Length: 86
Figure 1 (spheres, rainbow, N blue to C red):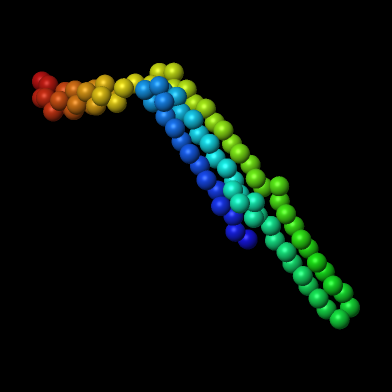
Figure 2: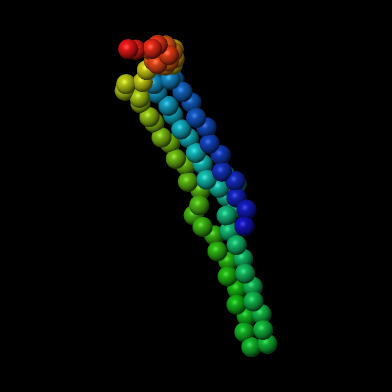
């Protein structure tokens, strides 16, 4: 059994809005067939899942901070830790 999935992610509005799109079983190939034969019986299974699913997700980061602000804070915290306090 083989199938292919694909996804995209797009960030917009200063990386506060993220849009995710994922599709499962893009080529609609998720199926399997089984045939068992004997002198007294024949067993055939053809199974096809309803597997094509499209997922769209939207995420809005309400309190998203700018990366530059976070870098400054880390740098400031590092400098404070290096100072000797007596």
